[in-house]
Image 1 (cartoon, one colour):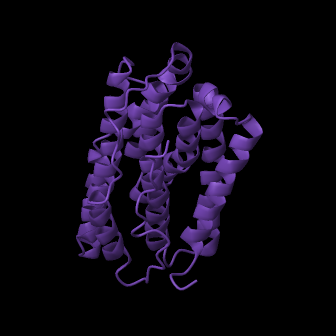
Image 2 (cartoon, rainbow, N blue to C red):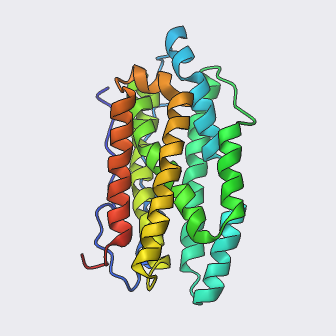
Length: 258
C-alpha cells in the first residue's frame, strides 16, 4: 500500500470568477490530463474468488456507464456554444467526456486482468442515457450530475471493498476526477440558471431531489454488496449521498464571489 499516492489537485478548490469560469475549467482539464497517478498494472496481487463475486456485477455496470461517447451531450453543448458565441464550453465538455472514457478504459483493463467480462447492456445505464436524450442541456446536466454525485460515494466503497492495491489506485484517481466533475457540472448549472426566477430554480432543485432519491434506491439495489463490503449500511450510503447533493446545490446557487 505504500506505493499509493494522492493525485495532484491542480484545479481543486478554485474560486472561479464569473468571467472566464469555463476557461478556468478548460485549463484544469488540460492540466489534469498530464498529471495522472501511476497505476501499478504489474502488481501481482489478484482478487480472491470471494472478492471477485462481491464486485463483479457492480463494476461491470459502472464500467459500462463510464464508457459513453457523449455524442448527444456534445450536440447540445455545441448548440449552447453557438448561442453564446464562445466555444469554451464544448471544448471543456469534450475533455470531461475523455476523462470518463479513461475511467472506462482503466476499469476495463482491470476487469480483463481479473477475468471479469465486460457488460454490453444494463437497464439502468440505458435509462440514464435515454433520459439525457429526451431533455434540454440543463436537465441533462442534472441527470449527469446525479450520476457523478453517486460515483463519488461508490468509488470510495469500491476502493475499500477489496484489498487489491491496483483497484485501490484506480479508484483514488477516479475519485479525484469525479470530485472535480461534480464541481464542474455544478458551476455549469449555475451559469445556465443565471437570471432565472428563484421559484423556477427551487422547482428544478425539487425535481432533482426526487430523481436523486429514486436513483439512490436503484443504486443500492444494484450495488449493495460493494457498499456492504466497504462497511456501508443503507443509512450511511443515503446520508453521504444527500450530503454530497447539498454541497452541489449550494455551489450551483452561489455567486462566483461567495
